[in-house]
Image (cartoon, rainbow, N blue to C red; front, side, top):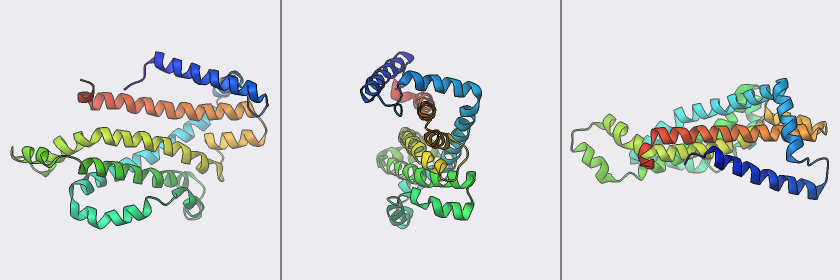
Length: 247
């Protein structure tokens, strides 16, 4: 379901009202209300300072997601269809998936430095397994009679993937992308606060150190808008690519 502007406006109004009430109850400069935070967000975006941090964070999320999709989705489709491959690789997936990849950030920074590669790598390691497991399970759930019916019409292995496996798994893959985006943005904060000089995570921590709480919440709002934008784009793509779900 793609959110309408009306639904989005209602959601923002409800959250803003709850935020305002909580800020009024707390009555602490460290927890400003929605209006000061929104005002700081607008000023920092116009000034270009926060826009640069937003662009840096968006690039890191998109880069890690792109690499994860290119590697995890094809492998997941194969593992879901080829039991022999799955028996060999599944134990490694089960052992590595539960490991909190964020704890590897210091090691990755020692090996790859403190630049973009380290930040993108740690986000990639987290969302790769989420996409892999989601895709594999979706491919495994395809009914055998469906595949056999297509084979009976003379379809080869490539045709089966193109006309059966990929379309059947696409909704689950997009759901995995949504989940991965939420995780990626969470990990992004940690990656950008360790030896970072750019990105929304750095902007949040920097404003906190300066006790500029309105600016801190402005950066938090920007991170929320980043996630909302990605989610909305995925919803639009799902409506376009998976039209049969909306008939």
